[in-house]
Image (cartoon, rainbow, N blue to C red; front, side, top):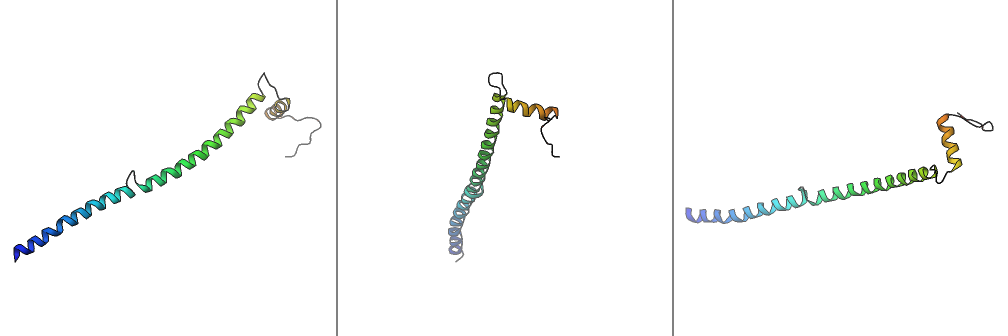
Length: 99
């Protein structure tokens, strides 16, 4: 009777080990470094970085435009007047200053 009991016990070991082995891979596929959750985090981070890049592209375009408008080839006198008064802290005689 003891040999039959041993064989029944050994018959359970292999399925249990296979279940544990499969569980490890399922856990790694979901929670691991390259798992599903990490992919979702990376996609969210990618979306944030793309939005930040779009914002920086807009700022760079505005700066390029302002630089072009102040260049020797194309001088925008209104922009030059605005920047000069801002930097020098001056105003025209016909302007009213509100502080």
